[in-house]
Length: 250
Image (cartoon, rainbow, N blue to C red):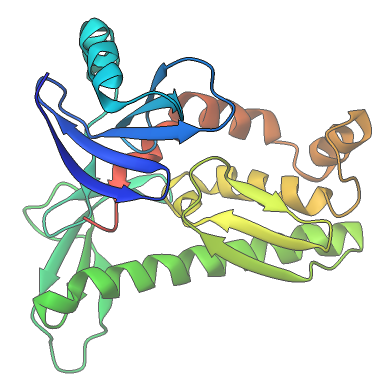
């Protein structure tokens, strides 16, 4: 199987392999006893884990034997959607279209409005086109931070607790987290989901300031302060992974 090495970082090697549409991330792990494969929906990549003693020729043969399996699973992974001019993406659960446009005197840098001939509201990102992606990224993070601060404040007040700090990240494995010191961290992608979902994740993490576990008392507390938690959990279970399609760094 022909392959080209794209990048090597520490024990991770990124390959482009003929016959496989997504990049193959080869990870050498000290405790791995055999070669394993998985397809990541969040990264749209194939991840091959191998023992340190194995070499890339063995990895090639393993990929060749499992190429059809990889292709089948890649077909089930939605294509990435770069957040560029003309892209349609969900904002608080509602489809919007991005438009990078020249600056207009007296108009804001970011503006949202319905527009004749467009089937969905338009997010206008004004200014020089080379700075459009950065402006959009900064605005999305700021909007997510604002929504999350409002939701966290509401639930923290209801429980009589106060988080140490609230931060936003592009997390790939969880929607939110709470440290033992009381620092809350959230994925900016919650801004893409319906508001009930962001509210639920905020309530979930604030409840951890009372119970740092997922025991019965914790879940009773979440359900008490956020009665629609079941609805939000069901939405995340069905649609959550699709939010990782939207790529700010394309």
